[in-house]
Amino acid sequence: DAGVVIPVDEYLSEADVADIHEGLWSRYTYRDGRWAIPFQSSTPGLWFNATMMKAAGLDPENPPRTWDDVVAAGKAMTKDTNGDGQIDQWGFGTCDDIPWYQRPMVLQAGGTLVDPEGKVAVNSPEAVEMLTWFKDAVHTHKISPPLAQQTARDDFSAGKYGMVFCSTASRLSFQEDVGDTFELGVAFLPENQRRAVGVGGNALIAVRTGDDAREAAAKTFVQWLTDTERAVGISLDSGYVPIRESALADARIVELTRTDPLVATIYDQLQYVADSSISPADSLIWDGFLNGVETVQTDPQADPQAVLDALQGEIDDYMSTYE
Image (cartoon, rainbow, N blue to C red):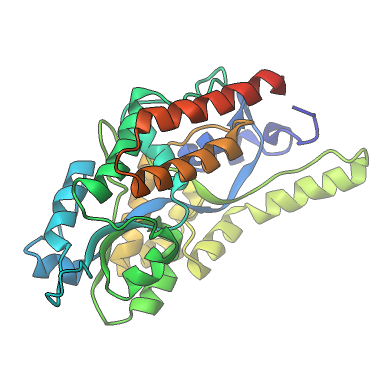
């Protein structure tokens, strides 16, 4: 809004814009314009311990597809393995960037966080359904411990969780940490009324400096960083997804997909990428969702509607002064 960021369409060709995966743009639009270019992009996924699934009588070849499926599988894998009266094997958890999973879950429930006019709605029935699901996972279904997000990634690798929501960019680190201690699997982020998958990772912008030569150099550098060869290289060397259709078609990526079934699933999920556009209230949404889930996890009497109504009021107050 301050006119500092250069619109992407001023320095990226129509062909390049079209080559970058359409769904990835959903996170970087604002007022009908594109303002950042996907770079090291990641998506959220459902990681699972296939060995634990089999032991619980579940089929890892058919992992949970819906929110309800996650609950059912989570119940089957939640156990007191040593008989001391304390659960020591949990069915489900989330990594510490939990608002990243909450955002697309609002869309999955049929809602919208940021509408085309920029109106933010965090207390819609769909958002309440999302927050209620996280509350019930702890207090009703008892498949998830409260306030365990900070250690969930390591605990999953240690075999203490059956499933976790975590970034698909964690593939290499999970494969290294898990090794051969159990069979590792990944599935699409579960759906509700629809399937929607968020966008994470890094993005690039070019800014106005008043120096034409520096701005031109910045544009050229961003173009180079996001070209097909760089997109392929980044995906081969990391867990990030290819940002370009041309990168997905590259022989090296095709071979990686053929030889690693985890990669095949992660890349296949790109067809469902759909995220909320940029909002001036993004940091409030993130912090509010994080605080909200911690509230309902620790207090079984907490009302998700009231929690989100309070957040909506905070956002409305901020947006009323933003313009």
